[in-house]
Image 1 (tube, rainbow, N blue to C red):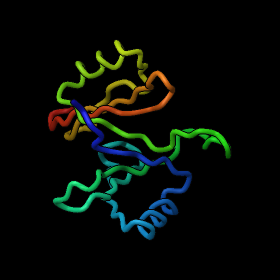
Image 2: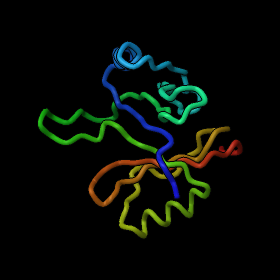
Image 3: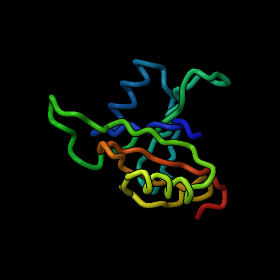
Length: 132
């Protein structure tokens, strides 16, 4: 079974969003841009050594934000998987679609994004120090 291990928040203004979440929840940030190739801030939201949350990331919004009164997919959860390719096969067999194909986070993991049968975006992540 796979559960959520990471979330992402899309923002129009990364510094403004960082400031908001730091003030509101005490979140801390680490620059992961060297892994992603674009501005990306790792979020520490879970208490150290605790089981009361997951950590995430903050990135530039890639498309216009939904209008008021519309649904949104501005938060994306990512599931940990042991075998990326097997997980992708299960997703596609269940009716999911590829949103962003498998790519390497060099020296860290394999990552990709999918769309579920309801139009929601989610990610899968297989840790692998040899990912290139």
